[in-house]
Length: 337
Image (cartoon, rainbow, N blue to C red):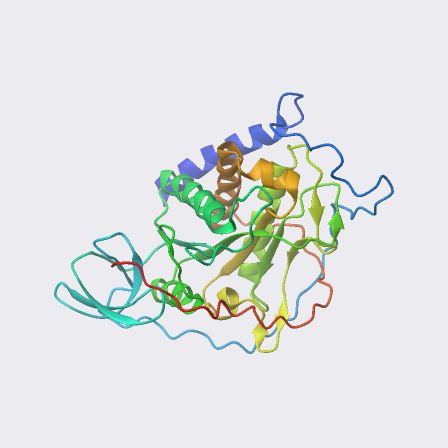
């Protein structure tokens, strides 16, 4: 990938220059609102996580290979990206965003992608909602679109699992990834319900249990996002085990987007806490959404073009089962295809 390598080198050099200038007094764009810390004696977690080793096995089944001669995905005439089940001429039988089967005439077949980006939530499934009314679904899509722009400028083929405000089931998202077989699948989210204050960004990235490539991808995205967000002066919050980590579930990886994409290098990123008032105010700014997307893209580009190991790896503390982790029980309405 000569062109990709050249463009990426330029991107990474630019990122290094930006990082070195982050200490300038004019760099922070947002300052914390008064009185957001609970008290001057509140416990703050260290921003230098420990390095540890995840479990080396997972019970998740590896997804079957794509069907020869059938494209993995289709961009429908209305711009919706869906997995293809079969195709005859211009007629494609596809999996809809809500998981049904439908026949679509026309559209653009997608045989593969280097990167698949997954903007979490969507449509009536808003995800977390900030105190300023900013929804996670809207924010995730804006950041993902910026990540796509940066990757495509570097010559990377990118597909999004969601291209507008509509709902997409976890099964459809992951089926698209396993059919397209990208080099990296990244699900982009923003967090809520923190443990308490922190002296830096409470970014979390999750990797697949037993996958060294997934761990490296999560560590590189974590590195870039924390470095970027650390330039902003806000009252940060976090979970005690913020960092790059795994999460064990009853059947392997806890998160469906990681468990169901076994065999594809995948990571899930919780970039910042939309539930925290000063962070929500910051995240509502288009400039901040842009730099978040830039940071995720830099992490992915480093994964694709370097042997950098990533950092920020932590041992997660045990969490109780969450029966809602598999998605919404509300009826899903497909968008027009």
